[in-house]
Length: 237
Image (tube, rainbow, N blue to C red; front, side, top):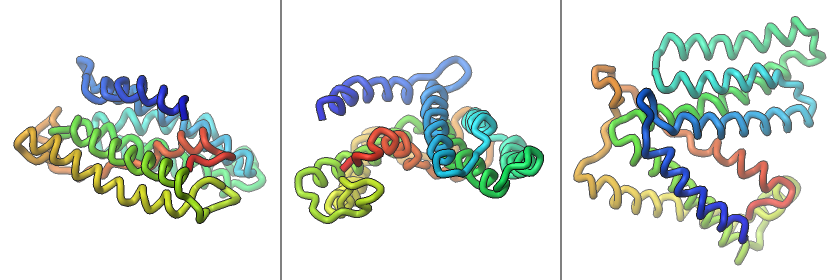
């Protein structure tokens, strides 16, 4: 508990710095998302290897980084090429290197790229929108509210375990608390940010107003893989 509080005291201000400030060329959040994506991919592929998945770890990490970087430019041709190569190359490698289970290696490699690379890259794209700072805070802190409520309620009143063999301290009571806390925090964030700004967020990239509208859905849960790695074996709730 003490370690979590200390981490929050320095981690949240640092997170806000990365969300709010830009370099001359791109938002600082790219560095933060890249660090999370790489750490998550390393853990993802390590667990896949332990289960016998034989993923192409180096290839997967490189493609995760490319997906995060590509979100800044939002070029459909480049993103499409990345996706096509992420699908095709691991399968070619699997047969070329004569893996025992090439389709299994392909599946785990592609899953890591999409889960940690493509999904987390949506934070970068979200930050590039008009009111992108507020939208990223909205997505991240509503997720934090869910996890925090689930942790404290599950620890205090949790009696019914969800998955005892995978994460023995996660409970249904904590899950219900999380599902209530997330929309509650979303409402607070909405009224405290967008009402204060006097306008609703517009989903249009701010670095090039001439670009056509592209809906961007934030991918919040990949941050959970980092927390899962920390709490694996003892559970978070």
